[in-house]
Length: 468
Image 1 (cartoon, rainbow, N blue to C red):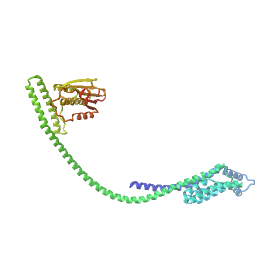
Image 2 (cartoon, rainbow, N blue to C red; image 1 turned 135 degrees about the horizontal axis):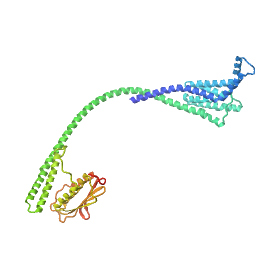
Image 3 (tube, helix red, strand yellow; image 1 turned 90 degrees about the vertical axis):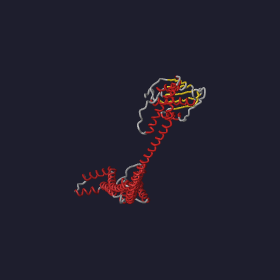
Image 4 (spheres, rainbow, N blue to C red; image 1 turned 45 degrees about the vertical axis):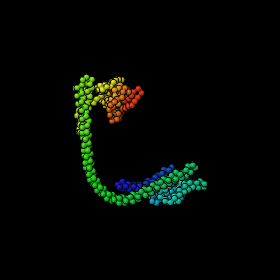
């Protein structure tokens, strides 16, 4: 609304300013016509005035002052100069009022062209013909009349061998004479037509602005009514938002309570089932260790008991997180890394596997996440060997590459199938692959020539020598 009012007001103001500028421009055009006429005919005027002054100063016979003035006034040169100046002044005055009354300017221009081939008036007359005449026939007639005066009168005098009444015409070439209507009549006429078209556009815009102002007033009243309705809707919307926020808080509280309840249920199930059975396994392993009759059985029982105790510790931490979500976990032992790899391999050896380890490349400190991922790769691969291959030979290779760490676990085919395969979820390698992808690494697992099964992992380490 405000933009439309500003635009219509600007158009109206522009139209008023344009009309004021046009009124001032007519006087400027009149003065320009007068000045150009005097400058163009200055040589003729100066010669005539000098000659008249000489005759006034030194007459053939001394005359009294009134008689001397009359003699100068009657002189042809003085009459001619005065007539030229008078014609220039009349043309200037006619140009000053030509915006409202163009015909005096047309008449003065025609008189000047007939008396002394005056052309400056044609510039103003052609311009105002384009701005004031409304019909195309009138514009064409004015142009043709101007061309006839500008070309026909000199041609007539040249054919008759006579001069203009107020002096000879200026000497110009035929080409200049032929092109003069183009510049003296055609160009100002085109400019005048353009100015008139522009004025018509401004006038139409001003009229449209007036109509738009009336429409704007009606729209402003409608807008005020809509604003009042909008304020009422906003108040209603604010009330609904407060109600929605209260419902969201209630929903979030219920969802959180449901999550806490479900986590507590899962923790109870894990404690009742997994923790109970692992505890029984640890107790039986301890009893076996005490009652063992040979050292190998005692060492095996001690390994089972230690492994079970570690599993119970990890399980207790998981249960603590499930029972108290959002609380800080108790300090745990450092995450396993490459330094703990030998202990992991020793546990597998104690379980009956033949495990070999090969390290290649220059050892260097690696980020903790990389070492932990490498440890998990070896751990999962060894767990799968225990589940599916039984007692066999396993080769663990760790290669320190310039920008990554390559880990592979290769096991040969077992000499005899495992009579008691362990159950599995089938998600170990899937979770391991997701862990490596988070670090930008890759995991490949499957049979290869010369091996029953191979697990290969490549883990980016960043720049060489990166610390933990």
